[in-house]
Image (cartoon, rainbow, N blue to C red; front, side, top):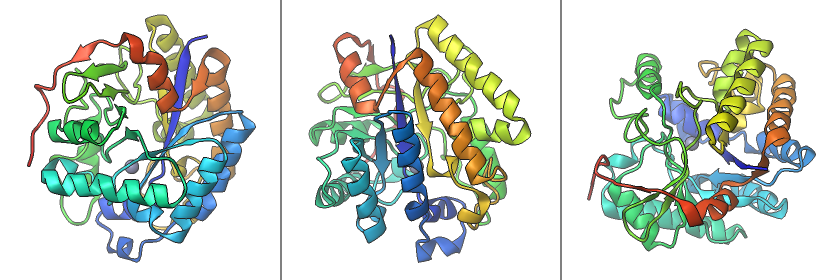
Length: 315
Ligand SMILES: [Zn+2]
């Protein structure tokens, strides 16, 4: 059976409010105590071991540290999702980027998890400098690209709805339609592996949790048909899918106050949990499902190389 992976970005309520320009974020509201047990239960019920990308600023707090401990105890991999969850990492200087990585690593280790070897940047953008730093710090893989043409649409949506004005650089970078949909090795540093968040083969439209829920809000049958078609295309094209989830995939609007603007939030939490169970079951029916770290380990021996000429440099 071919391999697939599931990962979860543990984006907290404050991080969504911050990206959206809602000043409430500064109180750092958290939905981790509600979301994490629910997600761990869904993974456990499906016999899945996954990878959870965590945000350093959360892991330094009690609820985030507890989440990391509980996730680790349940056998999942912990990886680095930056310190401050700012989708404009490409504007950081080299030293600021390095501090983002180091502070999060320290928080993760302090919370009792092994030193992370995987990284995913917020907002799907990677830079040459970031890849160099990851390699220097002993990371094995990056999982920050989303090879889709829908990035510019997401940006337009964000700029239209955010009260503080827009950011042209959001949701862009290398995560464009020409980027590969399957894993490869960067020709930079010590040969870091890139594991893209899989999009629908050929059509290059997203298939991750929040997009499926957006469809589910319109019609549950449509969402199931869409995901079934995506898995069929992956098998036909030899793409080993890497599925991305978020806490909002199991939370209803009442559990995420201030996020009514977010796609799929009209679907009640219990319905979302049920749908997630179906998604994970459909994936497991055709693939051996592991975390992103294990997925990379299995692919490592036979990966094509990719130039970094398209990436921005900074610092
Ligand atoms: Zn995130």
